[in-house]
Length: 150
Image (cartoon, rainbow, N blue to C red; front, side):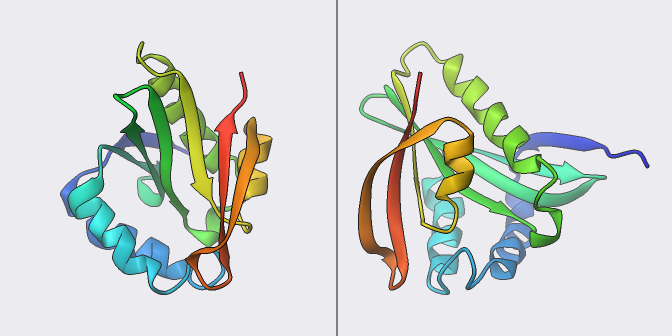
């Protein structure tokens, strides 16, 4: 079987498909109220955002944002179709974004803010845990603040 993987920049016409993706991940990976946060992110807070297509179907997405005068790169809003987990697609999308961040001369550190249900994935990608804030995203969803180790 030919498994064609494409990573491309987000288009506004992708929004409804991405909202469908996050709904597939509620309540396991996201709290119900995070759907509205994600929609707001796509409409007003997105800086660089990418979709991952598997055989021409959008099965994942994730972004990059910046802080501290563009010296900090933030891995933002990773969402994947549950049926496509375990195929290294998340790894490919994060490596794509880390590569972009590493090509920006001003970037001094790369961080991610995730939850207890996903932080092990980022640990495997080389991120170290710096801080935990209980019930940060929503009740039962703690914030795990992580930084990419050099």
